[in-house]
Image 1 (tube, rainbow, N blue to C red):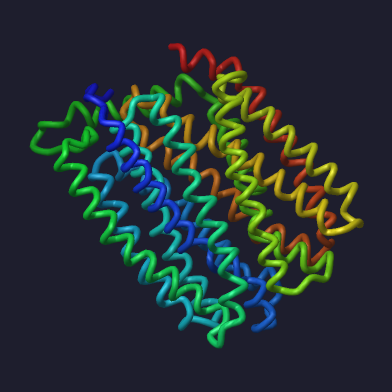
Image 2: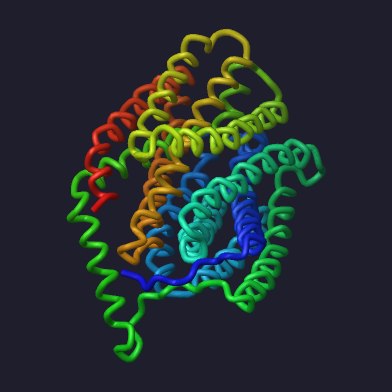
Length: 424
């Protein structure tokens, strides 16, 4: 359990803190998705197969996922703002190093794997900060607005990538740009957080052992984790499965969209990369739509997620039926599929952890669930490229249909158990 603390009441301060977190999330996506945005240009320059060229993307997904567990654990024990600062320092360094590692794919993979650990130091501590500072209504709205940062970061990456590809330094330039943005964010984050704390920003109760003073908090946190497992049992695994699948589809489609469009409809590299901009535009719309239907119609998070996942499966079926036409329906249905998965992510990754606040392990649960997302991401970034090389893009899209329906079934199976859990 955690001690009940007064929440942040000043609406102006709430808005400013939400904006700061959104900007931080924006920069984290700018410094994480930049290689994925230019991977098709790297393939054209290096001559690597897709499955080889995407190894850095696979590596960052793996280390980002593993890092979520570490970051989630530390977020309940170390001041969250300091964890985030460390993450931005490391990601700044890795982005500046990445251009010099090319074209050695092994070295590039190692550098981007380190970046994955750095990126993992962002979300769980941020959730801890927001759940500590905001009441539930403000927190729910904050998750939508902060999620805009991820979509805006993705849009920015895919808008500037075609420009950077045409410059003399080519795709490498995007890493210098992202590194500079991250360096600026380090100063902005710490100056702003110092100001918030000076004005009375609520601080999280940390679970640490210090001369026996906080041993009870440490024990209660461990007990809370065991209580969560006892209460949800195997249903927690089904929730994790649904999250893994949304990560597979969301990040897999986002990563391979430019290559899929370019290979299937024979568009140029820059135009193919630019086509990826529509995905985060749809995701922004998805955040608002998902938030609305969750609040007004389907308050049970698993019911809401299951319906959205099922709609994603229907969109994937429609994509297979229109695949051999023009590029417009393919881009539209791909965007809808990704938008649905962003909606599932909003519910299961952003909203769900708040229900565990009574156990004192919000950061840990947030890290665990986000870890599942990037298990799926790692599987998809390599797996979809391999399936495409062996069987073509049509086989990849068929796989989206199957796994989206599996995710919906997993969510529907948990509806009654989750309803009981949140009302205990």
